[in-house]
Image (cartoon, rainbow, N blue to C red; front, side):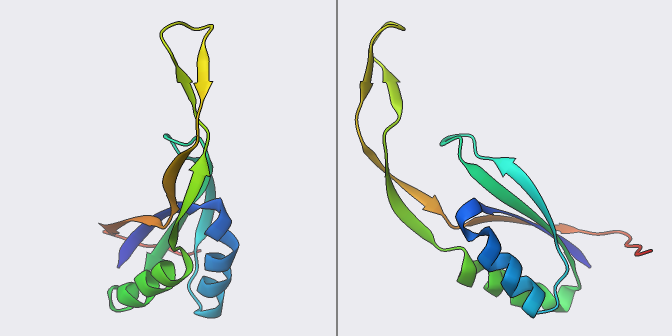
Length: 108
């Protein structure tokens, strides 16, 4: 058994959640926040049998595609009183996935 920890953008959360339910994969959703863009993320905790790992990874990949977005970050020009706003293209979405071994699993 493994624990899959998948951090995805909020925009993909409902689509992935629905796909997991349809595949009879149980998951716990946690709200989280990204560091660079300070944007909302969702972290899924998924306990899954070893033989179903590839199936779950495919669901994540199919439902959490990366895309490009124009953002306007605050950028300091030397002192705290002077800020320049300029659009920057950044890649958002996709998924960051960790697969961890599970020594023991109990369901009550």
